[in-house]
Image 1 (tube, each protein chain N blue to C red):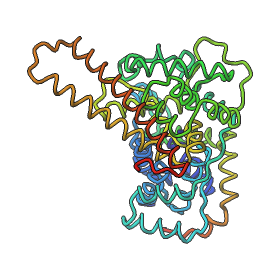
Image 2: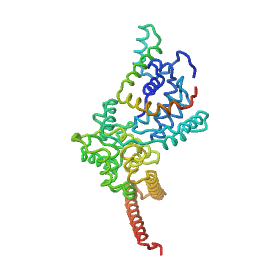
Image 3: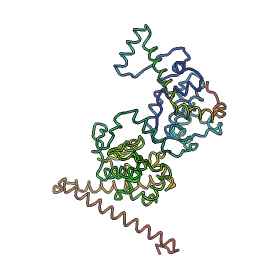
Image 4: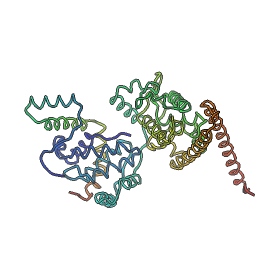
Amino acid sequence: MAKDTTKNILLRLDPDLAERLQTVASVEGRSVSDVAREAIAALVDQRRQDTRFSRLLEENLSRHEESLRRLRSDD
Amino acid sequence: MRYLGPYDVLAVAARVLRCSSADAVLRTDLNAVERVLDSVRLTSGLAESAGVMLAGLVRARPFDAANRVVAVAVVLQFVSLNRAELQLEPVADVDELLDRIATGEASYREAGAFIRSRLEHQPVKPEDLQDDLRLELLLSEETLTFDVEQEWWRGVRMYEQFSDPAKRVIVLAQEEARGFDHAYVGTEHLLLGLITEGQSIAARVLNSAGITVPAVKELVVEIIGRGNGGASQTSIPFTPRAKSTFEHAWGESKARGAEQVRPEHLLLGVLNDRDGVGGQIITKLAADLDQVRRKLEERMNWRERSESLVSGMLAEGTSWTTYGRRHHLIHELNALLDENERLHEQVAKLRDLLRRHDIDPDS
């Protein structure tokens, strides 16, 4: 994939949410994509703060650390 | 099954790439992730779903660095959220599979088979079920009043899609849940409902496979334990897995051209979710879950052929066959087929008994 610093995001939004994003974007003088990215990042943060989710993730990464480190890179 | 959403995937990516959530959003092709997750939602079994996820993420390369590591970490997280564990060692085999996936030599099916061979299921604990229920409540307030009789399903009241024996199975499953003082109806209760209903093909297949009420109840207590009196409410909610079982049963009934969801379709649903408590119990008691499925499908096919043959005969220009008459004849035929099946089972048991006493049943 391209390693640009920004990219277009195709979002499936309900009309109300799209309108609210548009309002926030115009008030703050930013693009809708920019505001949408920020909103997504906030939801990702929320997920990372979920206790069960983050506990399982840490357990997985710690248990499989050595195996994941030895996986061949495809970069 | 607990499916992953795009935020779950991004959270794993952010952790693996050691970057902020905002950076993870920038460094991930969200559209590609969405496409992969959409494909995963079309699958059902855990291994198959994980296979589609792994193959999809490796091929689409949505992460701008360490794509393989992030893809594998996402699959590990998906599997563990569904109470299983994936063994990665030896890593060389994983690498080889990923190479073949990337070049298109290995399909998602092969990925699924590979994952299945390295999957270890963890026993389901009561707190896991509570998690599922909590999640369900968060997802939809509808669950607070979820009841088979109240639930609307694809534009039709769900209960109307069930045959009378299938409705009896649901009622019996609810009674079984109350009997354990469980505050939910899971696939294990559906399994018990299917056995105690007693008259269907599903009940016969389960019985002949040694899956009996006492044996199942013993395992329910071993795996889940008894509840603490939370089942006094009139409407007991179904677990997400039980609801998935209904969805699968509905799909099976449609695929087979049946007008209603029957107990055998419900059993196919329970068999499909081998990670559910019902599926785990069948695996423990019958050893080979696929063999139970084959036996069930064999019986269903036989029954469908017979019914279709008789319907065809009745439809051939016989003006005296009113709908009521035809319905009555099919009902009579079903009774006859049931009796025939029962006699076949008895003959099989007698033959087995003779063999055990070193007597050739054909001599």
